[in-house]
Length: 601
Image (cartoon, rainbow, N blue to C red; front, side):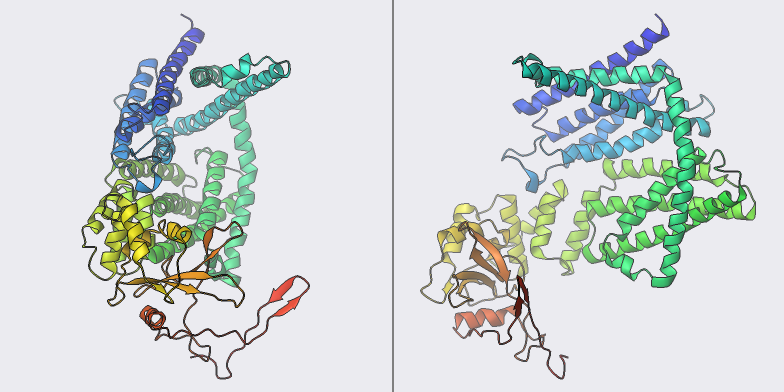
């Protein structure tokens, strides 16, 4: 058999295996049968479906037997990681039905697959190039393999897109003459899913055989990045230099400093590596350009430091979340690269071993990335578990809002969040204070409590309404049923855990509004929010009770939620119209404010 045929057959075999797995998973999800009903089965099979062909395609430098062994080995490792993700995937806030997990929760397996794809992209070519018995890898060949694999996958994806573009266009033409057979065929999963995988695999085999196109694109990419990186370096130097004039306070106040700085640093590092072949060759022989390249590397260091500082401020203020833990990893990896490149830049400026440290830094950062991702996705350092632990610790310190905590555990905590909710639910709900309210909210989130909908309806109907004689519309009570915080309410107003519904009319000719008050909670929705109807007659939170002030207009630190609560019960609340007139002209209204002469202290 010729090499041409052998390459095609190998790739079509891989595409056929992927087609069977992909269509099988799709059908099981459509029919709600195994493995679609179990995340611990569906997610590992999904990982095999993705990484068996991906590893085979990226290991083109190895022999056929070695490619198969690598592909199977990587697929098994990712399946084990998928098993861990599946066993901990249950998340109450994203259930599509009462039965539990379904493949509709694509975030449970697509996000880990994308992250693992980076690991496979870095690791598989290295294993394919590993020299038998010497445990060494040719660095330059590894870098070339990375770029060629990127171009291979991009060209194959382009071929697949063009293929479906042709089919879709032809289907549209046939529909013009009332022939719908092609459009009906495209809509069939048994046709479109296997065909897509087979076309992609054949495109890979074609690209692998045509090295000239890939080599041409490779060379042009290197040339283009060779003049794009100096521009990025110059802009980075100017941006860092501007900090000496205006500081970094304005940058940090945007709330997006870490994201933008890391994106710029990552893009600069990518351009630099493409231009220099991962540091294996010099970007330019001109002294001025080498100087600009070196200073550009040094300019990235303060950017990463400020990005890390900005991220640390967010973590200190709001605690850990899975997204912030991944952001920490990005900061550490980019910081490792930038630190090594900064040392390389200093060596270049001193004329000692220029460019020698970049390859070592790249290898070290790649190994750190592979190890960190496996630890994070494989379980030992699961971001969801670390985030739940962080938020629970903040709860014990009183640094997190009760509703925000329940929402986080329900929507982002996965199985660890469910375990934390069960721990909170063990507290007695008939006691007073925040622990009882949290227990009631946790029980409602778990859906396994006496606070079922019927019980909660009875509880809300029993809440006292002030002024006496007012009636709360049933439509508003139905809306309040959707608020988890209401599960912690009790009708007793004599102790410190009572709730009431207050009917208010804030405008003389305006509509009747309602406010839910708790004796020990001031500003946790829906408490303190003003419920009014919209144009469709639906109840919405359309206002709030603001911060308490003394009669002279100054803020008061002596105010407690119980004060307003008791005043409503005792009918001691008065309403005062605002004395200041606002300015109105054309279609604009400008509110006016006057400060007291002595100021507020």
